[in-house]
Length: 333
Image (cartoon, rainbow, N blue to C red):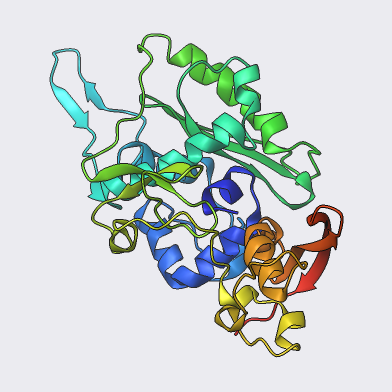
């Protein structure tokens, strides 16, 4: 499963894995520069929302994404004039660069997916007509329901809860999203609908959804994804790749095959060309590499393996195939 899909569906294990790979201290620092001023602990629980912040803080942080990586301190009063038109108070706007425009746009692209097909997809049924990006949030025990989102013109955050801390028993999509949708639609009436504009350096390419590698133009399938042309990983994508089954990371190599004398993917025998049934190479190369997909990210090292056995029959040299899906425990190397 791609990171995009995991965030769209609020699969939190992917969030924790990504945060630990980046570094928890770096995550906390990015949150602070993006507008979070409440104390944050560099722990995995913080990645899932264990630290408390105000609605204004989190909305301002999302505003950083909406403005292409620029943070601005929220304020309620722009200026005050006396009866003679003299300015007696004017807000001094505090502004800083928190992220690159390209990074902010890519996150916005993911958050758009949340609204289009993820946990906030019900916004369309509730009456949302504009292009929007955002994220639902539900605390443990359903005590707090959140939705923070933005259009190209307006941002708003909604929290629904009980002051005593009693369970609300509603998710962010059930309690907060309807309020946000109604407000955004009414408050945006004076703005013509428009789309999020990508900054210079963002290119769209077709990738293999399993390996993440860029597909060559003649490859069938794949998914469209935006990437930053200046990113270091782009050099790995720019050359394209042949149309072949994706390679599953060695960290997911099945323990059962290791015990049979195959220490890694490269040690497996090549595909056989005969009609005599499936070899280990046939099974792994054509099915395991295609089928170890969804649960490998959502459940850590516990994966599902699909195995296809070929059973030849004599009268016309055909092969009957039987596919079994069995659980396999992967071992990290």
